[in-house]
Image 1 (cartoon, rainbow, N blue to C red):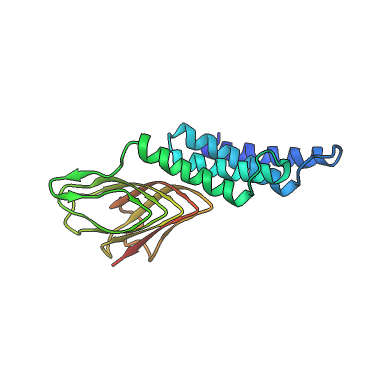
Image 2 (cartoon, rainbow, N blue to C red):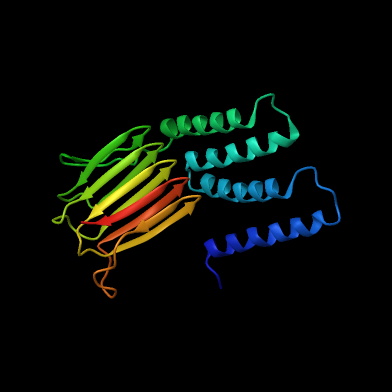
Length: 213
């Protein structure tokens, strides 16, 4: 039996095929390309709501509202304005209501990055941290002496996060990516060893890059 993630992706693909089949017999008011975008956006939006991620939810709502309004003309604003209005609204709600991921252990502090750039460091006992990167750039350096495994929960939206780890460390990436990517540079030191760093979270129109130094 497929896991839930694979199951939802399978359902999306089946729904898209069914919509295309129906469009062969029934004239639809919007184009096939817009329908594909709206269906994918809808399911990603449901995921964002379920995980209480306002940024992801409103990025998706921005796609839905802008795409739908370009055809239906309900709101007297252009699609680009609606798109950015929804993203900014989502960012504001996220900053107000979502729990701040930035954590502090002694003097070792990591903080969310919003519309800015930041260099941050993990050392001592701070091996379980979470950071939001929203329309910004994060460089995070992990010290060799930190207790392992290190667990990082990163949500990157329209931004970039670069994680620097020791050259001999193994990295496990378990992120969900929507129009984004997570890349681990270089080969694993030992394929059979347990990971030294486990990265979870999501990227939306952004990237997480792990570099060994």
